[in-house]
Length: 427
Image (tube, rainbow, N blue to C red):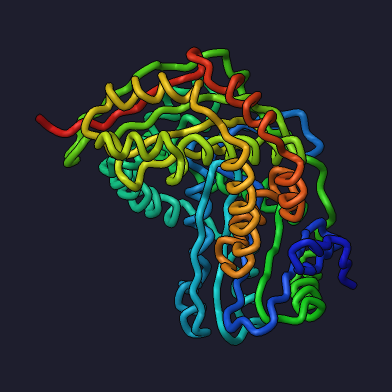
């Protein structure tokens, strides 16, 4: 049944892949000798997918912000009081779920009773149960969660930056939505989103551990047969045209913090997918490692000046519909730190020997990823839903040159694409 066409021979891994008649993709990575098995059942559906057209229709559907996260919560509630958490606990397994901008993932990790855990994960994801009563009850729970995030300085720092960088793209909105938006969610909204985005054609099953791939795939296929679903057409996700420039150049908020928190971001080009998107990710990641990695000259100069601490970092994040860099951390002097970075980031020398060393380090970290099943599943799902094969990474790393990084730097640091978020202590 299974198709071993997805070879990651350069890293010594042989995942087994199968696509079922329903459109569901399954990937199993055998890891002989590991005691733990880790499985995820993920959908290409996240917080930014609130405007869409269902396959084969022309009607545009608009749903409240935060509904993907709300739906994730509601999937754990089943008829007749069945408790999914309790069932996983009985099996000695751990379960969790999380919603991001572009995906929602349900998972378990276990050391035994894998078939029973798979049964429970499938039931969790494939048996929605939404009623007016349980939806209203959930609104209160999620409202408390939203208010908790509003009181978290680190979360506000990043969220305020996205709100400042983007004028219309829904990535500027909090994943959980707002208190006002979730209050308007109905069971009918949830069923529309479930039936659209939780179709097997839009989903991925990933299993890694000391398992027999053929047996795992056969077991999942048997579970799926009863649904009698056929592949669906593509979902048309509708995003507003993002204007050039940022929404706000500078945003400040006062919160109970010991020292100021500062974060600067740059919008980047969107619309890439597949290998092009991966290449941009790799180039930008290498750029930030060269400029502000812990061993870089700039990082150490700022550290010696007392402007940053060891937790200061820079990273690049992207999807098909958005892309951005974010640099930040705690600092006693936000204005001076910003000035120093604006002065040095465009001109800091990028040395070939440092570039080669960082590439080797990245390859080493990529290989090490396959020994951490949680991180591996997270990375695989994130890349898959962006049209990227995880196994491309070593080749792309080898292809990228220092000249590519220099060109990206010249293009990226545009003043009209820059915004700053600051959290200040109470005076």
